[in-house]
Length: 222
Image (cartoon, rainbow, N blue to C red; front, side, top):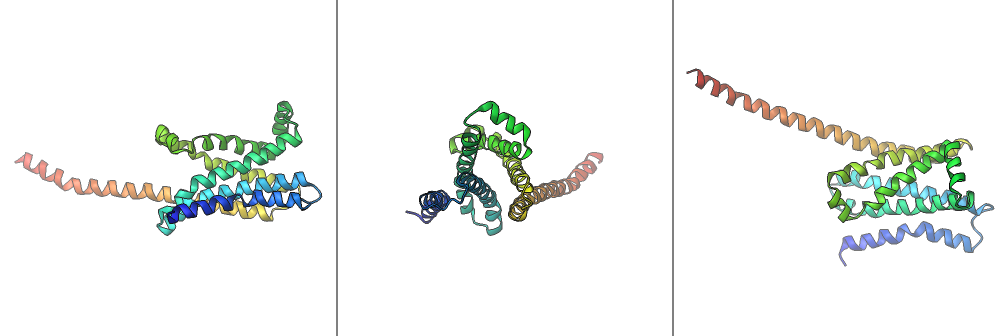
C-alpha cells in the first residue's frame, strides 16, 4: 500500500468517527435530554466541518506546494454530503413525518430552514458529479458547476447563523464564518492575481512585438 493510499484509508476511517461517536453515545445514554436535537445539531455541524475541510484542500496545495492535498478533496466533499443527508433526513422524518407539503411550508416560513434547504439541494448535483467519469464528460462545465460550493458555503453559514440568532449564541458559528470567509477570500485573491499576471504577460508580448512591427514598417517605406 502506498503512502497516499494509507492516508486516504486513514481519512476515510477518521471521517466515520463522528457517526461512530453518536452510536456510542446512543447506546450509553449520552445523547442529552433531547436526543433528536443533539443528533440533528451534531450531523449538521459535521457537514459544515467537512465542507470547510474540502474547501481547504486547494489552498493547502497552493501554500505547501504539495499536490497530494487535492486527492482528499472529493472524499471530504462526499462526507460533507453524507452528514448533510443525515441532517436533512432527521428533520424531514422527525419534524415533518415525510410530509412534503408540511416541509415546503417550513422552508417558506423560516429563513434559516430555507438557507439550509438551499445548501442541501445544491449539494446534490455536486455529489452526483463527483466521479472522474463525470469530470471527463462535463469538461469545463464540471468546473463551473462545482463553483456552486461557494454558494453552498455561504448558505450553510447563514443557516447556522440564523439558527443560533434565536439563542444569542454566535461564538461557534463566528469561527466557521471566519474560516469560510478566509478560504473564499484566498481563492478570490488567487483568481484576481492570476488574471493580473495574465494581463501583464499579454502586455509584455505586445511590447516585444511593437519593435518588430516598427522595423517592418520602416523597411516597407524604403
